[in-house]
Length: 296
Image (tube, rainbow, N blue to C red; front, side, top):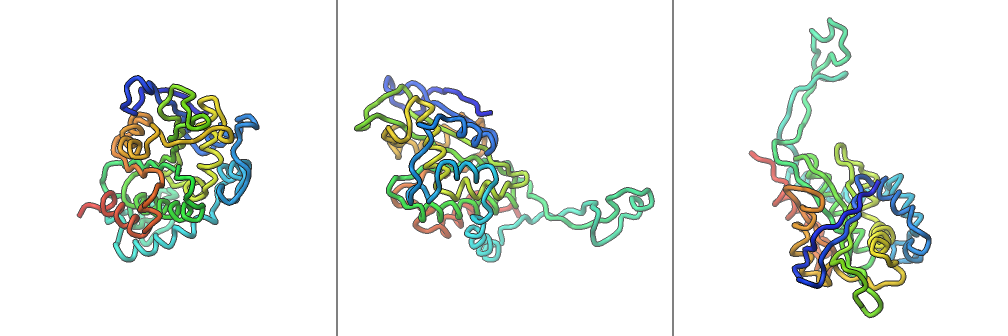
């Protein structure tokens, strides 16, 4: 079940916006359930190229079952950076298992099922990292470019999860406004967040949430507008705090507080000259250099 809460606004604009509003889902299933409960008038946009060719209900279906067809584009980055940069865990440990390269004689003699031993790669001893990805984007960015960005982000998550413990959160923070961008409520940002399972990584659902444009433009935009009493079809949707620069600068701090996180990699919403779109390979490399290098 989604949690609704309000926190003092991070807008920094005294007297303009007192609070930010959040819909927080602990799983993709919770996100789908919350979205499925919205009234018909609040359920997204007509299916078209801008929504990635998916309707509201189709996106809901993929939230529930995942979409492995979106994994392949991230495999390209996985292969390149595993081979080129060697981003793998450097720690190995001998563990007991049902199969392995050598017997565990005492276990075998006592009839225990884990009677073999094998070497297994394990995560290095690094602090957990929360990866927080804002799925929002400028309206003029095509679905094709956002799908490429999603594939790069998914590759980062997959590579980092082999090195250190991570949590993954897909979010949207926006400012629903009236016609002509007229202020219609007291919130500086209306937000939604969903935690995606990473132990192990729920690859099929992660691939849909990060890679399908409809997750943001159908599901999340509907939730953040409905949360403040309007609909995606009838309002103007602006950046949180009516400033993409302000949200990009304060987004990590906002999500640290809202989701109670510590070490965080915040991937801001896609905007003009977005690194994850302009040069996704360099973006993956930069993120791994900063957050993924295993200790020697």
